Amino acid sequence: MTERTIHLVADASSRDARKIHVRPSRQFATVQLDRDSYVDAEYSRGDERDLPADYLAAVDRARDAAMNRIRYEGYLGAFYWGNGPRWIDLCARFRDVEATVEALRAAELQHDYSKLHAIAERLALPVDEWLAPGERELIRGVDFDSPPGVFLKFLRAQASKSGLRLNGRATAGSVWVRPTLPAAQKQIREMFPEQYPGWVDRWTGYVDLDDAPLRPWVGGGGEDLSRGAIPVQFQQLETPSSDKCPCGMRLRDIGDEDKVHRVHHASWALGVRVPKGLDWWGDLAVVTTQSPISWRRLAHQVACLPQREDSYDFPSWSHVGEPEASTDNYRAYLLKVDERIVGYVAAHDTNEHRRWDLVDGSSYGVEDATLRPRIVLIWVADVYRHRGIGATLVQALATDSGCKVSDVSWSTPVSPAGRRLARRLSPDGIWVSW
Image (cartoon, rainbow, N blue to C red; front, side, top):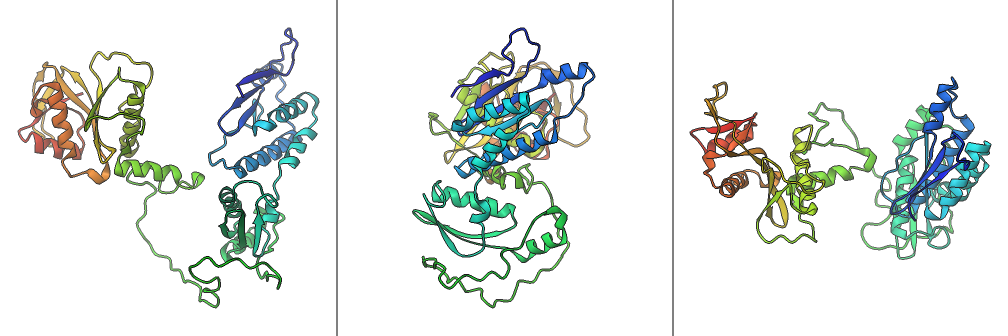
């Protein structure tokens, strides 16, 4: 499926610019109703009407059903949408794109929302039935169609949204489930009924029927080892906490189940894994602004780690467009250890330097116009710090530039870790530049 645009009003002389954009991605397509120019024209005439509530309700219902269906079929990413009055976004499986386009057309031009409701009804999933109380086996091809592992992951997310705990297990052709309602979730819903309209506790006190199917034992502990156990007791203590991880990200990111944080933290701690399709013949790679795009993107990926860690506004490597020569010989050094990039230096050449003795508060020396390599930023993966990686990188920069380590210039301000490294490499002082 290719990207396309459909004008709602086919008359070329019409000033009505409403149109529908269809933008496919790997697993679904985004169908967007573009009302931007139309809304501007309405405003110019003094008409600032919002979209009807029935319109928005039908769109929300169709969107929720479509997103649930796409997740049910295995999609794990995020959805992004606008909800008027300028843009309305719906997602659709490829087989549902035409029906979604027609539903939006009918809703926009004829104020007929029945097609949106029809999409919602056709795509609706029996989540309430799947999460009904009791131990049971859901059979693939009978109760659900997606692979058992995918279905179980989807069902866990739906149970979590409902405040349920899902005791589930996927087999070759089925999924065993036993939804239960934790006491804390029950208490929350009873304390704030206005937040959960229509909620009914179907799980507390539920007893399986005598002829209910018995889940096969697959090893491990028995099913009833907690029967009669004493509940865990909790205490409130004042403990130091921080909302920011040392890697620079938030400690909790509920929106993506902490996946983005875990991936970023692993790269920050262990280094960035070398891409499989990239030929790396040595330990150190020197990437320039004219290197192949795969190398320049890799340098940018590594540069984003110290940017996040130290809260810089911009990454130290941003050359990810077309290859172009830089007047200051801007370059990045990537050090590989254990098939991971654990060290990074961004550098360029400049002829504006002053001498500094590395003493806090001391003044800089007279200006020197010698062309020297200047360290823009140096970074080492957390696990590999204090192992001489930083010194190795500075020595590699000096060797590649044909100068001594003491002749390398450092960008100011020099961080405390940078000062410790500089004192070890050049105890008599360093060159600094801005």
